[in-house]
Length: 334
Ligand code: AMP
Ligand code: MG
Image: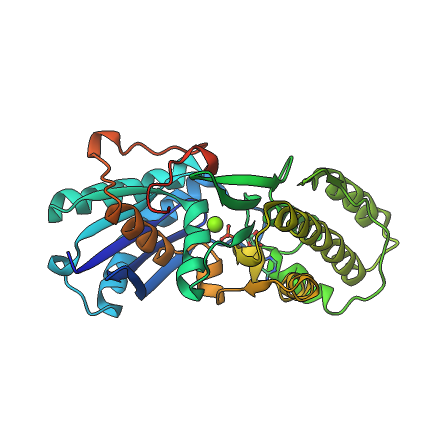
């Protein structure tokens, strides 16, 4: 096929997305990228409620994606969906929607790994050759690079994801969900650095102890919210940038792609750009719509894998909430 069109479905966590991507002679482009995200004013994300949110909005988001791309169902060649990893409750809704469309439209189904899609969308958008991915999202914090036919994890969080860290910290401060942007806004008003634990172990990072320390500082009442937000960001973003720099030197890669919702953070972007400039590396930061959980990258990843021969049978399309990045055979790269 000269030209293949993919409808992608994303539902690993708080976002239900539908997007359409095209592959023409190996080159990619995105035609639409629609989503609805579950948010709350108080408290964190409740998986059962997030999945209800997805059921409620699935149809509208999929129809929007088709309309925006000026496509009809008959124009779609394949259906791709996030099969791993993520929250079981929400993954199941997207998988169900994808199976239904595949059956109804009689099209092949391609189940894909969400983390790898974050890296591949960066490669496609910037024509990067062999980048390392700094993946900073709600549940995931990993440094991923391609080596020996696999996407391997060269550093990661030993406990919670950096976004969950920011969201929990925000909740302790009485802010809403998602907390990352709210912490970021307060941090810009702060400027006094309050000493916090800096937890880098080899190539890995850990946020649990910092969170406990921050909780104690919040309840002591001796610090302003602004300074706490500023200090939290400076600390955890420096940790992440440090392990990324080390992983790049270790792997001999000179291109960085950022992925994940926390990647929208201007301060983290600034640190990553400075680190790359110091080392003569290229720093590729997709626009926000491709940093956060999105279905365009799922659609594109589906095309990459489909063109390398992958098909996911309905009876093998069960979600895999805990599948790791390095368990995937990478058939679409040399
Ligand atoms: P994802 O799971 O990739 O969709 O990312 C969601 C996470 O990104 C949540 O934990 C948000 O709090 C976080 N996030 C979104 N925007 C920002 C921002 N500007 N700064 C820091 N974190 C953010
Ligand atoms: Mg993500």
